Length: 283
Image (cartoon, rainbow, N blue to C red; front, side):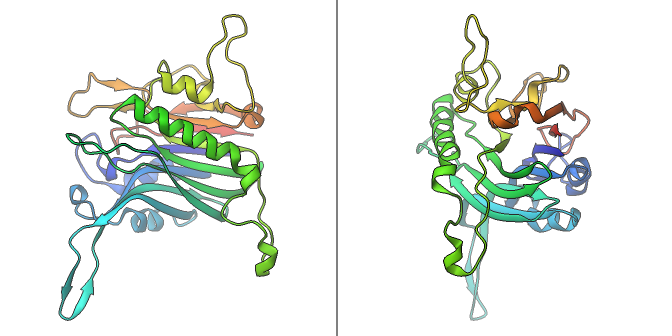
């Protein structure tokens, strides 16, 4: 099973061109696709509905989208009718298998005054895969400050680890005449975490390195599945200042899935965004 995470930067590539077809081409071989910076009504890409475009370009994948940011973008009454225009910015998951249930987890944020600060979120999708039922998350953390990211990671881990106790979108479905969905412990976190591997945020997510035992595989820390192979370590390049480049995008898996990770890589040839797709293969 192949999974990929890709921050698509509204469909605008490192060459400054808007091209959703090349984005779809770079991820279509994945079984599960997690995308960030998916928009509707954004001026920078002509107000394109990226959800509709991606759904059309990837017809063999079941899609789900959820917006963290959803604000008015010029709604009005025209000709005696309401015309609704909205700006949406969020995450998307596409899967070869049906998506049984979803939730949109809004992450903590702080009001800013001199920089734009958007509501960030994590989209959860319950999918029955060849590896069994899994929770897949498409995640986008804050880009402004590590304090915000630390708060978001704490909140995210609390929600993810509480899932077996809380259940997901619905429990007790028998009351409504529906089958009870699975409630798996195992999960995969895919996304743009806006953190580097040597950062405090990374340590909070994956756990610290013990002086004698290294980094242990334990139930309360997700395992970084996207760093098992040596190779490309850059997943983002600043298009205006190309010397600025970092590893910001990851795939983390629950401890129970760590042994199922076979390989990982970054597609440095993909030029459809300022980020690059991060791939993980599990078996």
